[in-house]
Length: 155
Image (cartoon, rainbow, N blue to C red):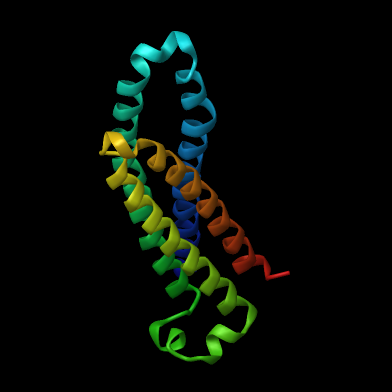
């Protein structure tokens, strides 16, 4: 009973962190940036995007840290340990394949996020950083798809 409660809380925290991470990126790209691109906002747009971006960077990496920690806890509480992950047979069934796809997508998200953070500090690379942000959002949504496959089964 206690393990079930801990597992439920861990999954809940994992989902909240995923919602916060993806929801923030969606807000930034679909609400804030389009408003700041309006001509009447041109004077303040650059500074505001930088300030919000720096604030989001801390928040985003905190979300990623929570997601990584709760992801490991969730697997452990489901009975998936290192010895199981070390076997080739684990990765051949639906759960193992979905986990492999999800983990690969997580690595892509981490790489894109890191590259975005580095490039966004360079004024000459802001356009590329903007595209990396969009790719990070897309990759994060793909992680969610693989998460659904993980718990509901692959099609």
